[in-house]
Amino acid sequence: MEAIRNYIQANRERFLDELFGLIRIPSVSAAEANRNDMVRAAEYIRDLLLTNGADRAEVHATDGHPIVFGEKIIDLSLPTILVYGHYDVQPPEPLEKWTTPPFEPEVRDGKIYARGADDDKGQLFMHLKAFEMMTATNTLPCNVKFMIEGEEEVGSVNIASFCTKNKEMLRSDVILVSDTTMISTATPSITSGLRGLSYIQVEVEGPDRDLHSGLYGGAVLNPCNVLCEIVASLKDRDGKITIPGFYDNVIVPTAAERAKMAERPFDQEVYMKSVGVEALAKEKGFTALESVGIRPTLDINGIWGGYTGEGAKTILPSKASAKISMRLVPDQKAEAIADLAIKHIKSLAPAGVKIKAEYLHGGQAYVSPLDTPEYLAAERAYEQVFGKRPIPVRSGGSIPIISTFESILNVKSILMGFGLEGDAIHSPNENYPLENLFAGMEAIPLYFKYYTELKRKG
Ligand code: BES
Ligand code: MN
Ligand code: MN
View 1 (cartoon, helix red, strand yellow):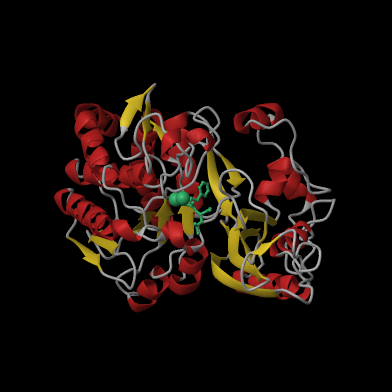
View 2: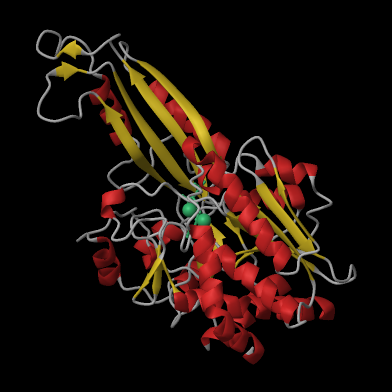
């Protein structure tokens, strides 16, 4: 670890320059205007892989944004680690909420502020530099492959077919991913699970144009009112989701598992303060932490319709829409849940309005086993870097492609994330502490070492 620490010290400024170069490319996957930036970001990563010692690295076109693949094979009898990450970022809006512009990275109070500083450019960059350090110091203990995509934030639409087409090229023993959080550097943790996701959009259509709300109000059904009634009824007073069949396949962990999970330090007051609220939502029978970690939920992500401009306009809108995400747990299936939700929502529509609803994207939840060499190697790496044994934590977030990797490539993933919950990913002023960035760079080579050792012992 000393050699790696010294290497980081000696190259710290260059590392930051390289990362900042990547961050400055506004690779917003959701924005058509940034299509060319997606290619530039992919090429930037390919070039880093090549200068850092990859045998091969290339940008693969897809029907959407490109995927970067690279590898260094040192000995086919050794294990192969496949590193997954994503170079696309969330849109930076609202811009006026940023202290400094989102694509002009700046270090303040020991943190890098920029869109993608954590999610996922900062985190994937740790792998590029861990790779550089292992090749430069001749300590790469096994084979390594990289698959870095540009569509994670928009549902990883094209990577499944890329995996199906390139099974042999992607063959590996474990997939290593840094795209999640840990509790803190004082209380290290490893993400042992992710929630799935089922995302739908609903539109209620009423009259064929906006109407005068005085001349027609009361007689013609109002799509905004109807939509609000429908979405309000999707959860009851106990915080349970009312869609018939929604909970059918939900696996509830055992009392012993739940007791173990409750051991993690958690201060509800601090948690509420961190998001500026004075009370929390509650699903009856579950704690706040459980509501995020082991329970499915339903949230309206956006709702619109009618007049939202300045002042008052007296209309009865023609249409109203909502985007709804459902976070899933094992063994709920994303498409099946979307079907149930859409069927139920349509059944609630009164005569006089039409409902259109579609499934946008999603994926299954993921749970990592805690007793395999894949996991134990991560545990050791964190313990050595942070001086404390990490605890497993089931995260509420989703990386839908992880369960797809398991079904297509038949390989398990290890979620070795180094972000913090306070990093404001997807929000204004996203940031990533330098401490975490450099700790990750130290931990990754240790993972490679311990994983290769544990695998060899069999
Ligand atoms: N890296 C996040 C997911 C994440 C963050 C998981 C922190 C656990 C802890 C990822 O980039 C993300 O934002 N995923 C989306 C899903 C995607 C389909 C848009 C999410 O969770 O909303
Ligand atoms: Mn991410
Ligand atoms: Mn994200």
